[in-house]
Image (tube, rainbow, N blue to C red; front, side):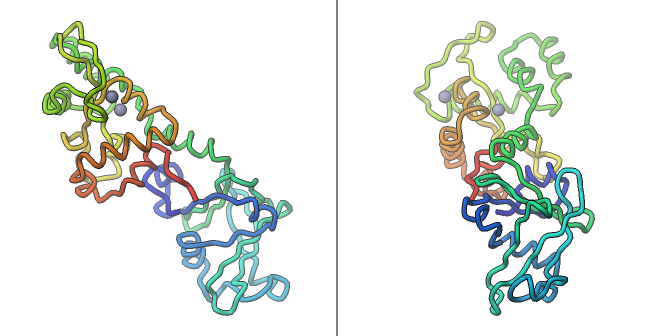
Amino acid sequence: MQFGAIQKIKFNTTIGSYSVVTERENYDSQITATDSEAKLLIDFFGKENIPIGNVKSHKEQAQKTLRLYPKGDEIKLNLVFPKPNKTELRLYLSTKAGFKPIPNSIWFMFIKNNELWIGSMIEQEWRDENALIIYDETEGVYQDSLSELDEIKITKLKARDVFSRDRNIALERIKIEKYMCEYNPSHILFNSRYTNLPYLEAHHLIPLALQKNTAKKLDVIENIFSLCPYCHRAIHNADKDLTQNIIKKLAFKRPELLNIMELKTSDIFSFYSVEDIY
Ligand SMILES: [Zn+2]
Ligand SMILES: [Zn+2]
């Protein structure tokens, strides 16, 4: 799979690819590079520089130099087209050479400073690290500002918001949704003691942490969803299935958002590190 916005930020690259190491690939000590992985390897090394056949008869040409993530040690792995029609590209894993990811872990490659990096980590670590990229430490400040009435307090709260969100846009969204949860309007809400209105939170479906990567404004009404505290916590913290369900429902509710941003639902999954990795 190609790197999405999150992985590009994480590895500070514009191009990369990742997928799961299967039991079989680990057992056979070889990975068949498909789609975006094959393209990356071919673009980087050049089709003509990858030998056809087995490694033994093309020892020098098959050996490719890569940088091992995260330290950047130089390692050499073998890469061949096993068949003359060049439809299959095979990368050999080797403990001795320094790269032998465990079964069901994620292996990845990316280009940085004209060098090809390779690495692996267990799936949970991969997802956790990616989720950190969109972590917003001033989220509470922003949510609090939505149920405050005191202008001085609101200004104080706003001054601490790392993303300088406009609370009025959020309040407008909540009003449009008639003070209901957008995931499920039947969700029971309590009233705010400050406003006497149902307590709702505002969630940016496309995380504001990605603002620096797009020219399109993300603090806009289309990107804001009115969510009850339960659903809001869930979209940020729940297991993969529930998070995917909430994202799907919200994305379906406002298809123009994904159109404007030129995104697919699977891109949104990856922003929350709940994408299906294959
Ligand atoms: Zn949120
Ligand atoms: Zn809800």
